[in-house]
Image 1 (cartoon, rainbow, N blue to C red):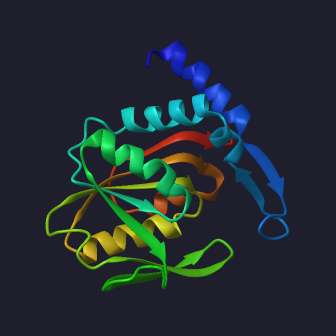
Image 2: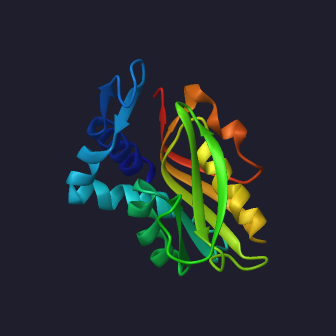
Length: 182
């Protein structure tokens, strides 16, 4: 994608994301990506732009974080010729699991992957829709490391830069298509 085309697309992506005040708790302004997803053109263009940002990396697995990370992780794994690992909320996977608990910006949670999802030495790209405080992505990196994998990068549709989540992540390239504030 050339520079002028990317700038035009980025403006359209920003315009498609709406703010929802006081969700999920009072005082939080939620960035709702569903209007972007409603447009086949914007959803496709955003996914392609996210893939272009990591295409040069050697990726064995794409670890997508539940739930909106799944929307981008599947197409990215296919485009990169990589396997897909689903990082789910606790209790959702049917087989032997690895689990990591972590802090959210408004509580605590846990993620799990199947124990055989990541092999020793595999290069893993972690994908999610939003980078906020970094807790979920850091937990995903921890679960990859505990599985013997290597985090080769992170990619997000959008980043809430004012929350400084990228500084919570281990050393690996971080790609965020959109960064707030603009």
